[in-house]
Each structure stands twice: as structure tokens, then as C-alpha cells.
Image (cartoon, rainbow, N blue to C red; front, side, top):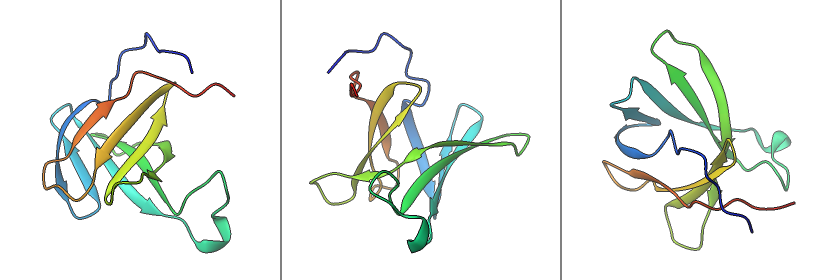
Length: 101
């Protein structure tokens, strides 16, 4: 495991509205579902898209279920994050470590 020195741009509180996580930073995180035929060992059934104010979208990561119900991890730009999606105002927190492959 290595530790990241990158700035965690997705960190913060979000307001959850259905499958959207609304950020005060001018973007949304959108939770989407993959069809069963597109789910693999490296691609889970859920993933995140970042939606900018202009409507442009960027794929972020698969959402990986942890051992805690409702809590997921994902990785973006070399930073691992955790988020509990069962909360009305989930906090996206960086884990400050990345997996080495």
C-alpha cells in the first residue's frame, strides 16, 4: 500500500436526492447501475458519474460495497474514498491510501 499526496477533490458533505449526491462545489455525483451482463469482477453493479454544472459527465469509479451495510468505497485519481449511502447527508471521506497493483 502506498500513501497519496494528492488533494482529495471529492471530499465533503453531500445532500442525497434519490440517486444524486449534490455537492456545494458546483457538481453532482450520480449513482448508476450496470446491467448484469456488464458486471465483472473488476466492475461492480453500481458506479459513480460526476456531473458538472454545464451537464458534462465524467466516469468516476465503481462503487465497492464494504463489510458495513450501506458503506461503499471508490477510487478516483489515485485516491480511495469511503461513503455511507444510507445517510441523507453522506460524507465522502478520503482514505489517503491507494492500492498497489
